[in-house]
Length: 136
Image 1: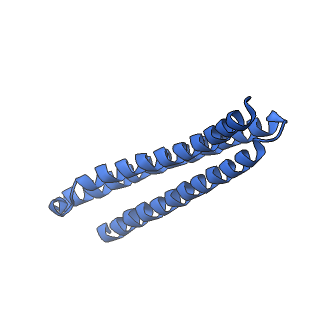
Image 2 (image 1 turned 120 degrees about the horizontal axis):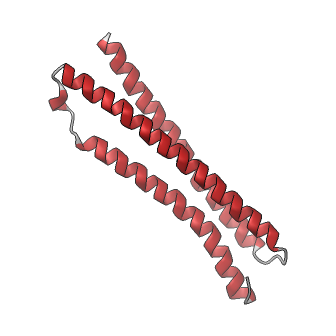
C-alpha cells in the first residue's frame, strides 16, 4: 500500500509541475503576443484599443499567476506527504531538504518572468507612443 501511495504522490507532483510549466509558457507567449499587438497598435488614434489589450494582458497574467500559486501550494502539500511517508519508513535521510526550497524559489521566479513580460507588453507600447507621437 505504501508503494501505491508513493507512486500516486510522485505522479501527482510530476503532473502538477507539467501543468504549471504549460501555463507558464502560455502566459509568456500570450504576453509577447500582446507586446506585438500593442506595439503595432500604438500608432492608432483610437486609444480604447490599447486600453482593452492592456486590461486583457493584466487579466490573463493575474489568472496565470493565481494558477501557478495554487499549483505550488499543491506541490508543497504533496511533498509534505512524501516527507511524512519517508520519515515513517526511516528513509528521510535520502531526501535532500533543499529540494523543497529550490522548487519554491523556481516557482517564484516563474511568476516574476510572467509579470515582467506583462509589464513589458504595457510599458514598451506606451514608450513608443510617447517617443514617436509626443503624447499618450
